[in-house]
Length: 307
Image 1 (tube, rainbow, N blue to C red):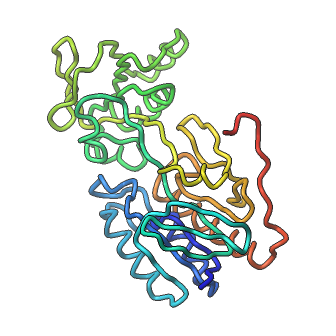
Image 2 (cartoon, rainbow, N blue to C red):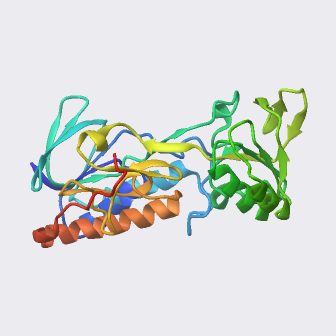
């Protein structure tokens, strides 16, 4: 069977795109590896109509709603390769299955590369976060620590002052110029220069000098990269952003490979459930348009510095 669209990744962005396409009565296959980025957190916030709902419940409900449409097919598994061209793509899964599709949508999400601080990974999504709009309010205006990871940590420190009393834990990862220090001082951000030994308890930061700093929650700015090498192997241009590497797309969600589209965290920054759903919805619409008007399928131009 040839599908109109094969969606690789069945989380928020991928399902939002699939919904638009099956409602246009297009045959859609979703292949999902089951690794949602926010699987570590207990509740999702900032998503209109779903505020405070466990993310697993949001996904399960969306999956049930999609399952009503007969044009949808769903496979659990990991895609190993994408080959072919417009109207004749082949998607090969890890278990050896091959599926044919006219268009490909990459909605694979990203992997978070966390700072190498003992105890941080274990608290990711529980007491350590990256998005203030998703988790800042729940800290109740308490003390907030920013675990230094790079230049984006400065932006986080400035931004999070609307959610609580902020301390920037430099930890040797952030260069602070005189101007930056002045800006942070105006925002009443405390700068902690000592190195971090580990994170303990709920969100206690134990410094190498023995001090224990207690926080209501911690934030950090992980570097992100596509979740797996699939986009690069398929020939899609990648680009550097302040948050990491993502698939390069144009305003119509097209990648540099004709007929291959991308959406969600793997193709857009900043990241949140709401933004992923919005971008996925638009991707579904743009893919449908490309099926109606095949002459519009063309690659985006590669800018200097793309990988």
